[in-house]
Image 1 (cartoon, helix red, strand yellow):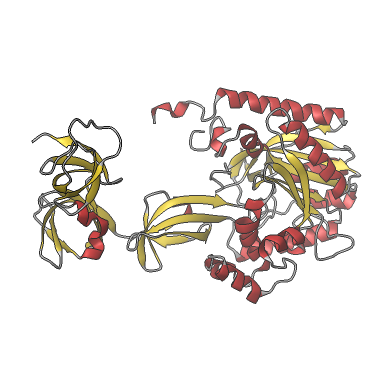
Image 2: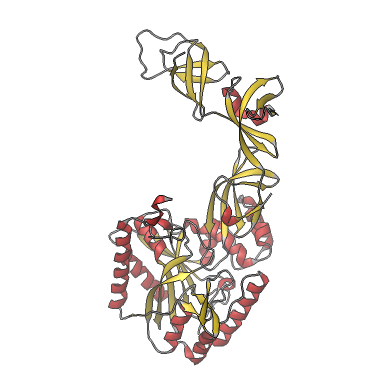
Length: 189
Length: 326
């Protein structure tokens, strides 16, 4: 892998830090007029998701990390691993629960998602920004209620719980924004 | 991008710059300080171990010379002072290679002025007056603050900046979530001070106020004079507003021998750190030998000053064509 100098640290660049793959979030050039130049860098550890701040002497470099985002289809859960496939090549990958993380509550069989690979091994899974899922359990709505205020919890087929308007019924399919976990609309079958 | 031909700053900020230049010229004209202009290109350069230069080739067949773009007009202005110019100022471009960021553009605008007969406290009075004039009508500042470097460093870190204690400095770095400082700074006292000051002291300085820090440790003296009463500190001042470094001033070193010695020292540091070789400015040494009058001088970054006046977060907001559009 190529190495990158501090002045190439741009948001999104993937580098190795303390033996973990990381993504640069922010890079600030700090230099006293008469002193040493530093780069104060905000970095996300892609394994743990934690964001840390680290300072480098300007001109120092880090090794690049072989991290790529690949669009895949979620196949099934065998109890221990979740299995994904690259639609073009039929290549399959298995991910443990740690790598799947929060994404697990939005993943339905056959859905598309993004799997981040590090040295060709799954590092994390991101669901699509919007998913359509059926409600398996929610209290019956109050008659005459329109979409205004309040709402009620609804459990979706993947296990996620989201707040939905009172008029939304059990068995209906809804559209959810996975980044915020918010209900967007009902989906007409 | 399609709109890269356009200026990065607003037309309003073009006007603000013009207004600031006018205010500065009025300020110095009223004080009988002479406006001067000196070359941007020079046969020699500063020896500052932390600065990288732009060089260019001067072709005048059969001769060919490398010329340097100035990192500040300091040397040329001191030659004028030695020649009897009296107090002088200029607004000019300066160039520092590789410096780019929210507060840096490799080509930037400096206001530099020298006051013959001024001590550092007198210069600081004048800085406060000038800042008052420039900020009036834009922003109401809290009263100007003045701190000794040792005092302010100790206040925010509990450390003594004048005595290097490797153990204390390392413990501080570990306790303050910057363990990397230990490997970056090692046993380099000046580097430790740069690191800790720029991370944990500077951001706290001058909340909506002009904050002047004077009496820098002798290991960060550059071209300032060692203090008459305390040889551990130099007569150097830095000016901050909202944690942003605006400028740097000295009670100027007039001793040619001492200056020559510091140049040699800085050049050997440059060699050790593999920085490009520089050419010592013989004219400056000669001017100091001829006699530089007792004076104090200040350099202020006008782009950052404009950032503060315009309340902007990036230097690009006040430059028409920052480096990537130039």
